[in-house]
Image (cartoon, rainbow, N blue to C red; front, side, top):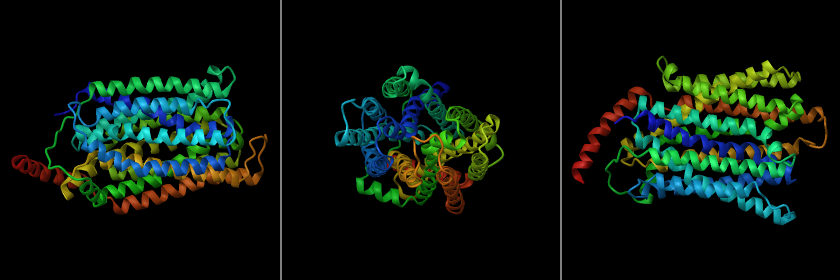
Length: 454
């Protein structure tokens, strides 16, 4: 049974609020802690690294919990609701640090708040993405809903990224601390509303009958899913590269380009083009297989990085050229983001075919695991790197060595990571269209046999 247009749209709507939250944290929490609260960049980098690794390790266990859930509302929607409500509360608290806190008390507060945020985001994020292979089969329907969801996520991410620094001073009346708190409240409300639309209108379509699996069986099947592991490793390297750029972009535009206001324009153009690239995937798929499209997407992003590097060296503030660089970078990034979701969904079917365990939530827990691990790696490099290059936030002009180090962190390291990811994925990923057709034919027979045995 195919999904209706209303169901596809309702699923995508949930991603808007969800990724507004993620963009608000990924793009501005370091700035809020460092610049607004005055916490050292190195402490923040170490905190984020430790917290995200700890949280990432817990993700597969959350996947198991979802997999074991049996309610009349399904196994995904109850956790979507619980995770969203709790995470919204924690998000507001994280950006509403009491003004009287300082010293060790401040460090304890922000540490606890950040760890809680990551943990509660997992409760919501894993069941959200796990629904894709549970409500679609490989092919057009799965690709379409992945495009819609990732496009909506890109829209939410772009809105939060491009407008936050514009809205904060307005809502705070010039007080950044108050402004961030009020923006957080607005995003929390949007988060609850949009996920509520998904919960109300999207239900599981395929109730695959399978014999109950133990926790041990799930993890054994997971680590024997070689294609899922390939996708995971590629996503870690790819996302860590892009997230590193995101972490230091504000500093790059403020000190290297020399105009922090251009960051908002850069993010807006990039976000718009990212959505456009996602929407264009079905058209490109008519001529090329997904694996070839991914390779082309990463090469495109590398070209955009090279353009940005040249603009930074020459201190060029030309708006058209900066927007062009943003368009090239985010076109490739948007395309790759949708494709990795499709690839991971296909590995669920592959895992069932190879190991007899489907485990949507356990497999998709890897997506949140790798996103957090990649983010942890990037924020550690950013936090320690900013201190190592001796970035002076009180100075109007940075030294030549500092600017060179900033370009290295912002552009060169990510480019190296993208090259590694494309080489690894190209050599290891084997699930092309013909292979997936073969897998689905075999699964149809196996599911009928299992259904007769139960």
